Amino acid sequence: MSENELITILCPSRGRPDRLRTMIRSAISTADDPEKIEFCVWIDFDDDSYKELIASNEFKNLRILRGPRLSLSAMYNSLLIIASGDYLLWGGDDVEFRTKSWDKFIVNAINDFENKVGLVYVNDLGNYEQKYANVGVLHRNWVNTLGFIFTPHLRDNGVDGWITDVARQVNRCQYLESVEIEHMQHRQGKAKMDKTYSDRDLVHQWYEPFDLYHLLKDERRREALYMASQWPNIQVKFKFRYLFATMYIKIAKQLSRMSDLRAVYFGSFSNSKFVSRVFERFSLRSRRKWD
Image (cartoon, rainbow, N blue to C red; front, top):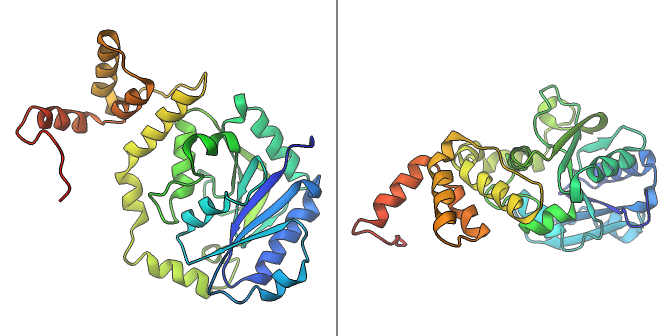
């Protein structure tokens, strides 16, 4: 790797200093150039289990950000504040790096995308179809475009599916099956249930991530359209769900100067939403109100 190809591993961690050590050591021992890897870790203010690790200076490329307890997506996004690398890899303290020279493989794959704008994800060795970026990598060019790495709409589960869907919509997604970073999660029988896992399960008793994920498919469409408006040679595939919006944009651009950002706004309207907004526009309720 060249001098400027620093990889930042983003990792929220709670109550697992030993698991965190294992993750870091596995990444370093299997990397082609361990000097070009940094670890940015979120630790909650109320978590005292990392005192020894923080005081030890055991890992010179370890950077810590502390704060109140947040959602998983918010922790990942907050870690961008201290991240120095242009290659941003997300993982948990329950992953272990298995493939030698994994860093070289992911950097080369990102560099294959035009302007380095694309998503690369690896094999997490789960006994399920590897459809989503459970462990993935983006270049900072992508993150700087949207302003975040994971959607703020979801707390935790579903964020990997969200970003994978957006990447596929813009045809900038690559799966590296031969690069293995194993997710040692309890649902796969690879770890014991602990309080960190159980706390997340408790949250899902009142927060249903899968319903929200499906409800917000037009938000993912909007992100894809925005990426296409900001980067050359990215096109979003036509879908019948957005037929009316697509027709309107084509007509409006012929009749007036519609900006690309306004086209992104209208382009994310489903057929039903577009029709409802038209009726709304010509009804007495011409403006939406806060209830």
